[in-house]
Length: 236
Image (cartoon, rainbow, N blue to C red):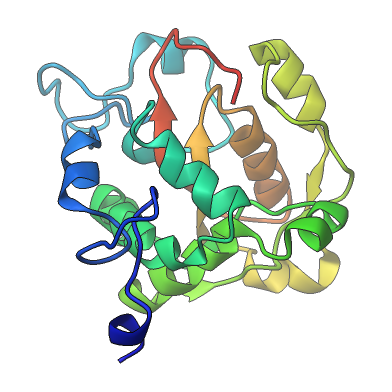
């Protein structure tokens, strides 16, 4: 009934068929299909077999165990991510949750708790919502996996990761996350699915996974909306 009165709009403001996306927008998204690298979710040109990782993942292991991405981060998917993040388009969260369900089904089948990457309290106050918590709720409803939006906190305010080198990104978020003592029982001994919007160098997810494992997580997997192509500009 609400959709009849206030029809959903696509990212350009035109009426959308469903989920806030037109057929044209759908057709331009580069979805990442199996087979993919088990470590970072990058697509393979051929299937090397289960659990195989790319050279980049073997050269620099991360604290998270596995990663999956729904689509490639490019000029076509960027607008979706930014509209959800900065333009109050929380109506996009349910459709993006379905994207994560599709790409991360193998991770969700084993997950015991879903944890969104948190915002610092001052950034949360100015933005009014954490876009990844908005996605976590429908994802939990779709899968039956428990959602713990407050299990992980950002203990210090960090600069934007945009424009930083890989080493700069790691320094920027080092020690920036923690699991409060009261929330540790929700993490201890469990397989955690960490969710974030974009995977660039993996620095933020690595820092989050370290904090979750320090709190006793048995494993930490990562599901993201979009993944930056290897060697692409990292100004996001």
